[in-house]
Amino acid sequence: MPMESRYTDPGPSDDKSVSELVTDVTQKTSTLMREEIELAKAEIREKINQLVRGSVVGIVAGVFAFLALIMLMHGVAWLLNDLVFGNDNFWLGFLVEAAGFLLIAAVAGLIAYRSLMKGAPPTPDQAIEEAKQTRAALEREW
Image (cartoon, rainbow, N blue to C red; front, top):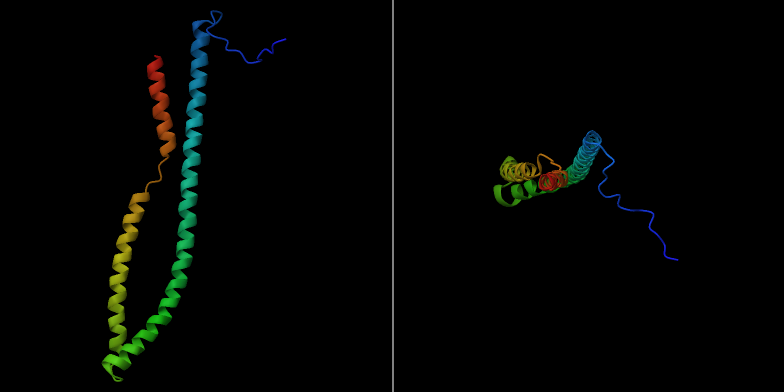
């Protein structure tokens, strides 16, 4: 005895009136739009969470690197004082280091600015692509 599928394609129905068909299309379109909006919201939430996580970890790493750099550069400034400038002008070692730090800060700021501009604004790319495909499919049908 062959098994029949419980799911069958109802096919076009002559029993529905035009108003019922319009109502059905309207409801399905409304549901589709709500689902697209939910997809966009979820996508943006995910991207923002990733940006926040990455930022927090980067800040923590930066703080510890900064503390280590302070200790290292303090030693280098005293080394410059002893080897290059003599014992009387210890401030010159710190001045040379300060100029180097300003140069590094300028380069780092430029890199950070470019990186932030690439990531902003967090747009729901998948949802936009899905909406374009849905629109194209609906236009082919009509």
